[in-house]
Image: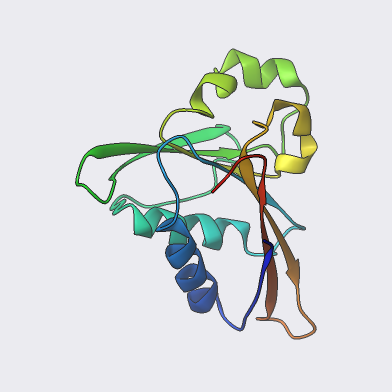
Length: 149
């Protein structure tokens, strides 16, 4: 079932992502797609909030991946892997940092996921974000792909 949301501020986008994040389980991958400024990083911040990540969350545009330490709903440590594929030139770069292995460990959040779809796991959530007709409005579509429950 595809979920469609409209948010009217960065805070609303983060709140929606926090609620979505509470449904994720260890091993889940979230593939974020949308233009520059669509709110992908705000969405990641919200998901990280749901896992009690306390360190600053920023897009890893130049380092390709950030790793955050959080916890699951049972209080066990959970690593959140945050990728940004915007500046990646080849799949080889992603293999060099071990991206395929990270995608099934902890929680993985992949900005610009549509740049290298062949590396995404078959079981994931696709999150498409777009700008609305007013500056703060965002349209968000969350689609489970594969055997996601």
